[in-house]
Length: 126
Length: 281
Image 1 (tube, each protein chain N blue to C red):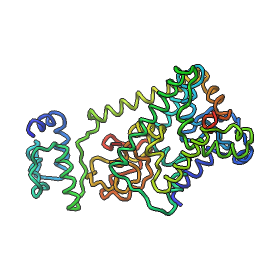
Image 2: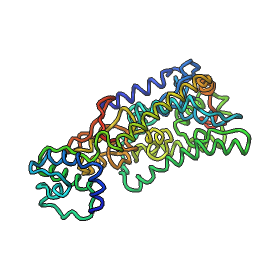
Image 3: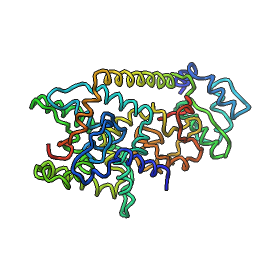
Image 4: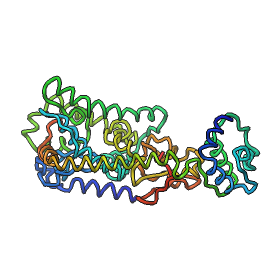
């Protein structure tokens, strides 16, 4: 567990601190105090679990107690969020490029040529 | 009547406005057939106004000279990025039919781990019938074949074959073993639809498979706010599709899970109100 936390510590501790302070005023500057947060006092011992699991457990405990909560291990601007945004850009570019190329090479006419005639295969004859 | 049912009804009418053609035994030749619709709707349906993206895609791979389908792929990608599987849930005539038939009384098969595994089959059908077989036929016989339309597509049989064979004696006289196969398959699907929620969409539709891959990049659709999700599983329990969590690649954004979420973490997001902390898992 220690090694996993270390790896998370480098990446996203500031966000955790933000998450922690939003529910615990006895706040914290590192992940250890997060593990000892009051909300988790009555839960099972947290052995061999990831930070993501701890987050989830906290959310469940808050939900049980009917308190407001909102925190996440996924930060705006995080590697995952950026990957999704990058992929989205490439896909939009690909769509635009494919459509433009298709129209340039007069492919709508080919689509029309197929769609305006009865497709014998589609109706089980061809 | 639910908003979604109204949207499905009107999209069906929009895809198929030439209802008077249904008894004419012929199909329309309007300029709108240059355009592909987002949902599965056979272009050989006499009432159809536009082209089926799946049929058009295969028509590029089949014939004497296979071509790269840039226009059709671009259109499908554009629809997928705009709407994802919202198309399946809100604007697919064949999906609408499946939902209507499922409302008929009878025992209903609920989703399970088995059905979730079966839902992966649609990717296999997509690759085999839309990509591999058309080329395989081309290399074997010199002419490619739109294999999915020819051997499986029940939408083509229902929307194209039924009205055309009913009112066109010439076509009827050409019917053979393939017609029998397709009508048998259609009958099986129609019966399954009564007992199973959207069986074709969940396990067979290559178009749904394609849009499913784009679901997390789509501008419209269901999102889960990961900051408040407690993974209670209620969204997946309410959902009739093979989703594991709301908004995943099987989610058709029907919205039935929104009210079931105890932490209000599920939203139907529109265009710009998606933030980075919400994830389409």
